[in-house]
Image 1 (cartoon, rainbow, N blue to C red):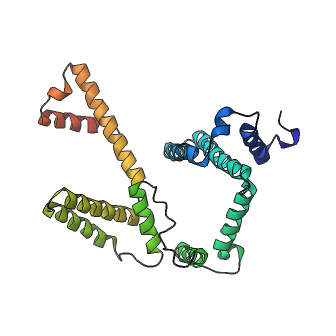
Image 2 (tube, rainbow, N blue to C red):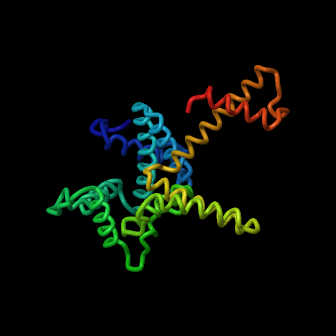
Image 3 (cartoon, rainbow, N blue to C red):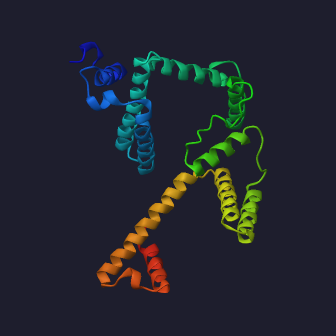
Length: 260
């Protein structure tokens, strides 16, 4: 049984996780390591993002709990190895927030959000080891499009950015032309990479999260294609037997019928 004095709040969760990992705990939880938990952490992050997009407070609360569980499991594993406790995690992020917000917790004054970002990057630079790149802390395991936007945001904090978004859009047209002029699969792949990177830059300047935008486009495509398949079933025709022109006409019909 859990101790009565720990049956509420954060302390209760910490004791539950410790019990799960204990000698008489859950065999599955006991065998987990930092490495074995990685896929679950990634999955929970995506489920949290989906809950955000759905806009359900109840679902969001549930997914935040699942995400917190992953953090608690990693902290418990570290505590068992004598590395650190969850309290060290909380203390560390609290100290970092205070240090990086001198305009809130100190006497520093700022004129707006843009100046906060500049100051934030200057403070982070102080924390970096000598010789570390501005981009070294961006996780390379991120999805490629999200990684592109993240490193682009980082460099803008030190002034490396186009003055106008129209200049980047012109760059998109330039990259498309270079794809047309590319010779061979390897060169074409390189030019496609440059095009996607530039599109990510345009999206960043327009405050569009490209991962979210692309997920929405994928979802719309799946919904519309499913509608096309359903129409074909009802009409007793095989989709694959339709000509491209007929398929395209069906696609336009699906676009009108399916919202998104």
